[in-house]
Image (tube, rainbow, N blue to C red):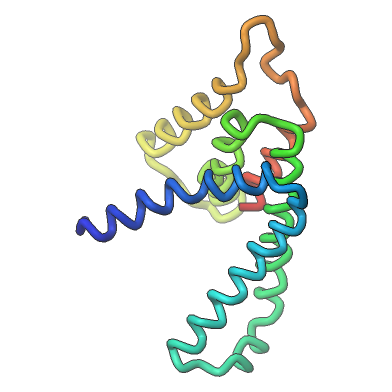
Length: 157
């Protein structure tokens, strides 16, 4: 891997939780959510322009664009609800555990198979994410509604 790729990956890893932190601290998290969706729309427009494509070509795939947009709104709504009621450091790893959902759907509905080492690695991450919730003297699932929103965000991501 080239140094520029490593730098981009590390920058992305640092910016993702920062974005969620800013959403949690904002007085209007729904406004921030819409701003993020608008930002993705701007980026897509820039890519269309840079590649010399016609924006009208998007009408050929409008159902997929609609599904993608609704999925993005659903994900951010679940993230906002998770952050409104829970601790970012506890629930953020769960909201970003989408590989678990991808493997589950791939196995059940698409007939994919996965190596034992891949499943063990994903399982280790899942156990670590849930272990962050543990507080001495508290029930392991002490905030079921927040956990539900975090799980739905994971699936929507």
